[in-house]
Picture (cartoon, helix red, strand yellow):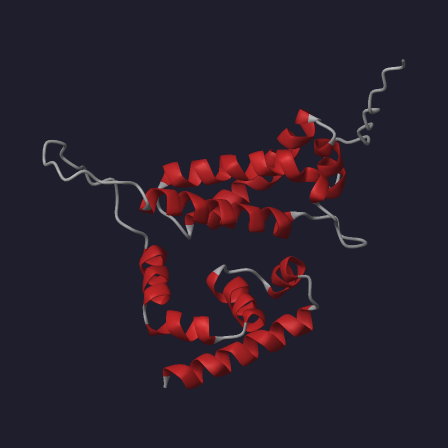
Length: 195
């Protein structure tokens, strides 16, 4: 009886100047150095953009760590468009979802009724946190939920998540012109619903 073992895929040749798809292909076969290069390249701007969404640095650190853990686990699922050398939109999608998960975990923590443990103020909510909370639970939230999923995803990506039209098109996997059209239609419908 012969014992068979799956052959390990070979990592592509990579270095600090390699494109994101090459680094992700190397990460997919277990190259930790490729993950370090990708982290050094993208973590600073991801942190800066996530900071606009949450002022709690502990939550940001946790979300960023979970983002790159998800990249380590799922690097093989990245499929770039022909000629695309940047995985920024893909990484942003992971990062914003990880931040939302972190914020949901925090929101679902149980707070005891006892007064024996004093609470300390750890910081004020960012202006964006306050605005997003009002959007979600105010009249605009109801109007957003009344939009079709296509229009809602386009307006959320460009306006609420702050992505460029190009980034939104990559994430939504639709042409840039379609993103612009959907955003225009969504804004018109929101205007009607709120007036």
